[in-house]
Length: 295
Image (cartoon, rainbow, N blue to C red; front, side):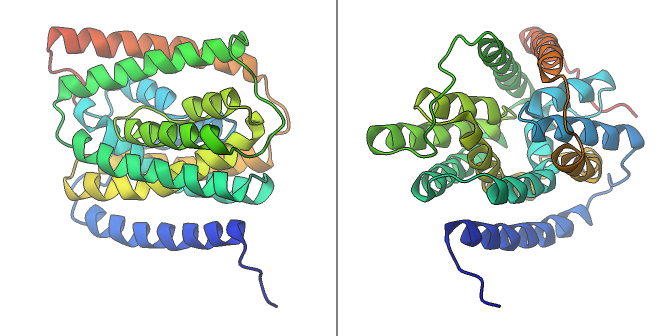
């Protein structure tokens, strides 16, 4: 049986290669870590956040908020742990949506590629940031995410058109925006809401955002994570918890859940993200050492 190597199949093949290569690379670093004992709590965080992520709500805001309930991750390690731990669930999301949602080939390839380039440069900056600068970036990002989600709920920005692709200046703007969002992801600021809003503003159908944002994150995370792993700028136990709980969360959300009160969930995420943002920015302003892992 001959499989046609079209753009979608090419991306799926590339995704498998990247996922396998990243897994081998990550495991060599995990084995060197003395912090490999994950917990049911950390796996539950992975399941909940990647379940919501697959529905398009995003995972970084909720993950950060849940971790801070028990001080599970040092604030300085937030960007690296978010990116490393959510990588495998995002591989699963990307595979599902690349197959199920059609998007213009040029748009898909260019926006994904731009996000990867942005992430590579962003990770180089992120690993050098102090704890308080990370708090400011993540806290500010959570505040922006909450505002964007509220804007979407109240339909204060265009909800998009019917197009499943971009061209001309709109394609150029989308590529630049995705490069910026890719860089911000390495600072612990989720890219799903910004990408969905951007493509909607540019006239695309919001459904077309799913393979773009999930494909972009699936390919940019390994590029950024090479630096996080090399510099040990992550928590192994928390990252493993996200992976072990997150992949089942993705599968349940994609194949089992048929209806869910998304509006209520979005309100909850806005509240949680706003509260966590306030606490992170307040601690950064005080210059405290909070956010350490509980023993």
